Length: 131
Image (cartoon, rainbow, N blue to C red):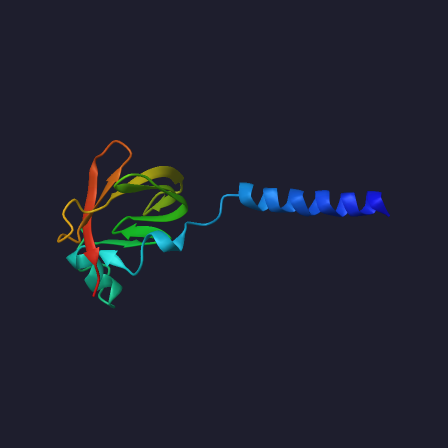
Protein backbone atom coordinates (compact mmCIF):
# COMPACT_ATOMS: atom_id res chain seq x y z
CA UNK A 1 0.00 0.00 0.00
CA UNK A 2 2.81 2.44 0.86
CA UNK A 3 4.45 2.25 -2.64
CA UNK A 4 1.08 3.12 -4.20
CA UNK A 5 0.70 6.19 -1.96
CA UNK A 6 4.23 7.31 -2.83
CA UNK A 7 3.58 6.77 -6.55
CA UNK A 8 0.35 8.80 -6.42
CA UNK A 9 2.11 11.59 -4.48
CA UNK A 10 4.99 11.64 -6.99
CA UNK A 11 2.59 11.72 -9.94
CA UNK A 12 0.58 14.58 -8.40
CA UNK A 13 3.78 16.50 -7.66
CA UNK A 14 5.08 15.93 -11.19
CA UNK A 15 1.80 17.16 -12.70
CA UNK A 16 1.92 20.32 -10.57
CA UNK A 17 5.52 21.00 -11.63
CA UNK A 18 4.71 20.35 -15.30
CA UNK A 19 1.74 22.74 -15.19
CA UNK A 20 3.98 25.47 -13.74
CA UNK A 21 6.65 24.84 -16.37
CA UNK A 22 4.30 25.19 -19.33
CA UNK A 23 4.15 28.84 -20.35
CA UNK A 24 0.56 30.00 -20.02
CA UNK A 25 -1.10 32.35 -22.44
CA UNK A 26 -0.43 35.98 -21.72
CA UNK A 27 -1.43 36.98 -18.21
CA UNK A 28 -4.61 38.99 -18.59
CA UNK A 29 -4.09 40.80 -15.28
CA UNK A 30 -1.18 42.94 -16.47
CA UNK A 31 -3.38 45.14 -18.68
CA UNK A 32 -7.10 45.71 -18.45
CA UNK A 33 -9.37 46.86 -21.20
CA UNK A 34 -8.51 47.88 -24.72
CA UNK A 35 -5.82 50.44 -25.42
CA UNK A 36 -5.12 52.21 -28.68
CA UNK A 37 -4.17 55.34 -30.50
CA UNK A 38 -7.05 57.50 -31.77
CA UNK A 39 -7.50 55.52 -35.05
CA UNK A 40 -7.09 52.22 -33.16
CA UNK A 41 -9.80 53.08 -30.63
CA UNK A 42 -12.11 54.20 -33.45
CA UNK A 43 -11.51 50.86 -35.21
CA UNK A 44 -12.11 48.94 -31.98
CA UNK A 45 -15.44 50.73 -31.52
CA UNK A 46 -16.63 49.54 -34.92
CA UNK A 47 -14.87 51.82 -37.36
CA UNK A 48 -13.39 50.67 -40.62
CA UNK A 49 -9.94 49.15 -40.66
CA UNK A 50 -9.22 51.14 -43.82
CA UNK A 51 -9.95 54.58 -42.32
CA UNK A 52 -6.39 55.18 -41.10
CA UNK A 53 -3.30 53.03 -41.65
CA UNK A 54 -1.72 54.26 -38.39
CA UNK A 55 -4.26 52.34 -36.27
CA UNK A 56 -2.86 50.44 -33.31
CA UNK A 57 -4.81 48.40 -30.74
CA UNK A 58 -3.29 46.80 -27.63
CA UNK A 59 -5.04 44.18 -25.48
CA UNK A 60 -3.77 41.87 -22.76
CA UNK A 61 -3.53 38.97 -25.23
CA UNK A 62 -2.04 40.74 -28.25
CA UNK A 63 -1.86 43.74 -30.52
CA UNK A 64 -3.13 44.75 -33.91
CA UNK A 65 -1.96 47.38 -36.34
CA UNK A 66 -2.96 48.11 -39.91
CA UNK A 67 -0.68 45.40 -41.33
CA UNK A 68 0.35 43.28 -38.31
CA UNK A 69 -1.47 41.10 -35.80
CA UNK A 70 0.35 39.55 -32.84
CA UNK A 71 -0.69 37.04 -30.19
CA UNK A 72 1.16 37.39 -26.88
CA UNK A 73 2.55 34.02 -25.84
CA UNK A 74 3.88 35.31 -22.52
CA UNK A 75 4.16 38.61 -20.71
CA UNK A 76 6.72 39.36 -18.05
CA UNK A 77 6.73 42.41 -15.81
CA UNK A 78 9.83 44.41 -15.11
CA UNK A 79 10.46 47.67 -13.34
CA UNK A 80 8.40 50.20 -15.28
CA UNK A 81 7.60 48.02 -18.28
CA UNK A 82 6.27 44.71 -19.53
CA UNK A 83 7.91 42.54 -22.17
CA UNK A 84 5.67 40.37 -24.32
CA UNK A 85 6.86 37.48 -26.44
CA UNK A 86 4.64 37.62 -29.50
CA UNK A 87 3.86 35.50 -32.54
CA UNK A 88 2.99 37.87 -35.38
CA UNK A 89 1.45 37.62 -38.81
CA UNK A 90 1.86 40.33 -41.43
CA UNK A 91 -0.56 41.35 -44.16
CA UNK A 92 0.47 40.07 -47.57
CA UNK A 93 3.15 37.78 -46.13
CA UNK A 94 3.06 34.02 -45.78
CA UNK A 95 5.38 34.04 -42.77
CA UNK A 96 5.07 34.34 -39.01
CA UNK A 97 7.62 36.20 -36.95
CA UNK A 98 8.56 36.02 -33.28
CA UNK A 99 8.83 39.44 -31.71
CA UNK A 100 9.63 40.96 -28.35
CA UNK A 101 7.28 43.84 -27.61
CA UNK A 102 8.04 46.33 -24.84
CA UNK A 103 5.12 48.15 -23.24
CA UNK A 104 6.36 50.98 -21.02
CA UNK A 105 4.38 52.21 -18.06
CA UNK A 106 3.67 55.95 -17.89
CA UNK A 107 6.39 57.96 -16.19
CA UNK A 108 3.96 60.48 -14.78
CA UNK A 109 1.01 59.17 -12.70
CA UNK A 110 -1.21 61.77 -14.39
CA UNK A 111 -0.25 60.42 -17.82
CA UNK A 112 -2.14 57.33 -18.98
CA UNK A 113 -0.10 56.88 -22.15
CA UNK A 114 1.85 53.66 -22.65
CA UNK A 115 4.64 53.53 -25.19
CA UNK A 116 4.94 50.38 -27.30
CA UNK A 117 8.29 49.58 -28.92
CA UNK A 118 10.10 46.66 -30.46
CA UNK A 119 13.00 44.95 -28.69
CA UNK A 120 15.48 47.54 -29.98
CA UNK A 121 13.37 50.42 -28.65
CA UNK A 122 12.02 51.51 -32.03
CA UNK A 123 8.61 53.12 -31.43
CA UNK A 124 5.50 51.35 -32.66
CA UNK A 125 2.78 53.40 -30.98
CA UNK A 126 1.64 55.42 -28.01
CA UNK A 127 -1.66 54.13 -26.66
CA UNK A 128 -4.25 55.18 -24.11
CA UNK A 129 -7.34 53.39 -22.80
CA UNK A 130 -10.13 53.27 -25.38
CA UNK A 131 -13.14 54.72 -23.59
